[in-house]
Amino acid sequence: MRPHSLLLSFIVFLSLLAHSLSSAAPSSQPSVLRQKSSPPKPAPERPPLDEGDIQGAKFSIARPAHWDGSLLLLAHGLRAETAPLVADLNPDHLAYRTLRDEGWMIAKTSYRRNGIIISDAVTDLDNLRAHISNTYGAPKRVIVEGDSMGGLLATIIAERPPGEIPLYHGCIAVGAALGTREPGGTLSLNFGTQLPLIFLTNRSELTAPKNYVVPPANFPPEHRPLTPVIFRVNRDGHVNVNQHERLTALRALNAWLDAGASSLPKPAEGADFFDATHNPEPQPPQVVFEANRRGFTARVTGVTAVYGNVALNAQPDDFASVGIARNQWFQLTAHDTARRVMFGRDFSGVKRGDWVAFPNADGFFWLARNLENAATTANLKVGDEVHVQSYARLQTPAEDSAALTP
Image (cartoon, rainbow, N blue to C red; front, side):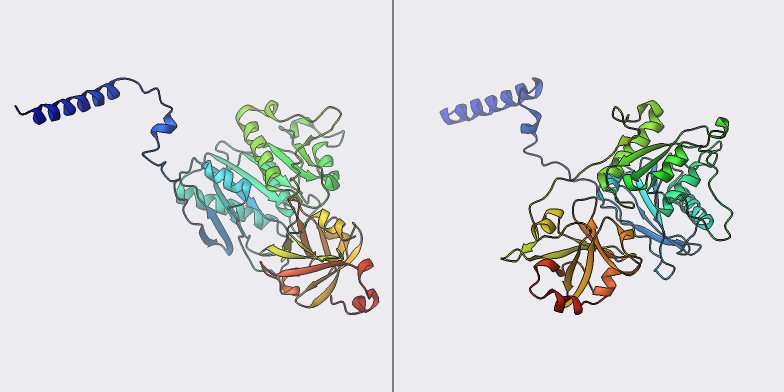
């Protein structure tokens, strides 16, 4: 055999020996190093939204990549009778995106009509649940989350006996409008809670949930198998809660269903209710200030589909920097039209049709008209700019005030 052939055979032998040893012996290298040669698999692609209509009620369903049988039904609040029927589900909101990534299905109905609707709205939620069961298979766990009037619907559902095969397992009522009454309606509260129920409530709206949770002295205890609980949000407003706070309530309700009421978070010492507040961290200014700090220009970052409320990238410190405090009127200019706006706490602080701006639960601002559509009135869309200025710092406040438009 030639010398170079001997050398080649020896090299091949060493290579085979090294491969054999590395396969037989456990590796001492961290697993992350061994993964460099094979990139991680991409996350499963989520199916698109499923949309349709049941007896006139529109619906939207966000399915996960792999459904684990858990279903969250969303019940919206009061909408003007003239508003379009919209199942405005946003699956990218933090709480819903998190649940969807964990295998939950999220679904929402428009109800069959707008206005004060209770009996038919509960039927529309039942119909959507039945449609999901018939289409995708029977869910193993169903939670209803309702806002405002939808919180009343969630409370009514929590009062229904679950039956041998429960349709629903628990409910969350956000800013529940428990005093709402449907003209001529027959469905109302009986205070006999049958399912786990959490009220997620701003501090300015605690009275109605407190009166529900603590029934009258002569209330028969056997009429209420389960006692609902209140999660307090240390912020004023109506349904002025953020996605972190919603997720806190959803996590707590799931723990309640899994391990009983003893798993619920406890109120702090001396407090009546658990504080679910999640205050967002202030962000660096995103507005553009005038050189003399008499005002600033903000940008529209969102518009609600039904109500026409406008989200601005302004923060409370931005208003303070130009001398605008709570309960003061200021001038807002959009598309060369000036309007008089109140720096308030929520929608109810001004008369119908008046303009109001207030901090939302995510640390930025809503611009709205009480019971009117702000986006349509001012022709505002995402990306548009508005200018904010204090009347006290206007050069000619009388002239500017006279030019204001509703």
